[in-house]
Length: 366
Image (cartoon, rainbow, N blue to C red; front, side, top):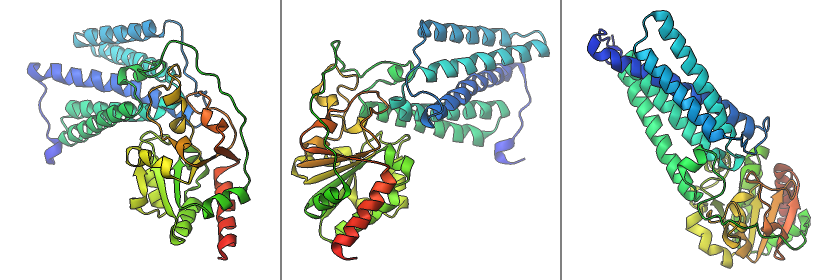
C-alpha cells in the first residue's frame, strides 16, 4: 500500500472516531449536494434568484439539525448493521432537506459567497471521508479546500459588509441597513447609441471599464480585450476595475480577462482605483449592477447600504451597458441609471462590444 492508503484495524478505541467521520461526511456531504443544486439553479436562471423565506424557516432548520443530531446519537449505539444503515439514510435525507432550505433562503446577490461556503463544505466532507478511510491524502486535501473556502467566504463577506452567519441563514440587508423605507429614485434614463459611445471613448484621456456578470454571460471578454488594446495603443489610459464579488464566483472576471489576453497591470481591484473616478473621463460599465449601485452609499435604508461599491457615478461620464433597466440580483433599483451624467447603452454585451470595436476601428482607419 502507498503511504496514504495504510489500513488500521478497527478497535474499540478508534471505532468512535470512525463513526464520527462517517456521520460528519454524510451530513456535510448531504448539505453540500442539495445546496449546490439549488445554487446552480439560481445562477443558471432555472430557479428564481429571490430568497425563499419560508414561515418559521429558522425553526425548520433548527428542527432538522436536532433530528440529525438525534440520528447521529442513535448511530453511535446502533444495535445492528441495519439500524446503523437506517440512521445514515435518515441523516442523508435530513441533511439534503437542510441543504435545500438553507440555500433557497439566500438571495441571488449572495450567491458568490454561497459558492465559496459550499466549496468549503465539500472540503470538510472530504476531510471526514479521509478519516473514515484512513487516507491521509484525502484528509490533507479536504482540509486545504475547507480552510481556503472558509477564508475566502470571510473575505467576500467583509467586502459586502455582511456577516457570514447572516448570509448562511438567509439574512436580509447589510449590517448598516436602516429600518425606514428605501429612497425613491427620481430622474429619467438617457439612452446612447454606438456612435455616441465611440465619440466619448476616442475623446477621453482616462477610461475605466467595470465588468460584471453580464460580460461573463455574454462572453464579451474578447471584443473588450481588443477595445482595451486599441485604445491603449492610441495613448488612452485604459484600465479595468474589479469588484471583489463581481460575477457569480470569486475571481471569475479576472480569469476571463486574463484568458482574453488583457494585461494584468491594467486590471485593478476596487480599493486600488475607487478614488480615481473623479479624475476619469469615461466609465464603461458592462453588465454590472449591484456592485456600482450608488444606493449603497446614499440610501441608509437600502438593503445594500454600507456595501462597498465602485463609485462610477463620480466620473465625468458613465455609460452602462445592460440588456435593460432592470434591477440586479439584490432586487434593488440603481439610481446611477437615472443620473444626469449617465447614459444607458442597452443590448447584449457581446454584440454591443463588437459594434463598439467596429466603430473604433472605423474611426482610427484600421
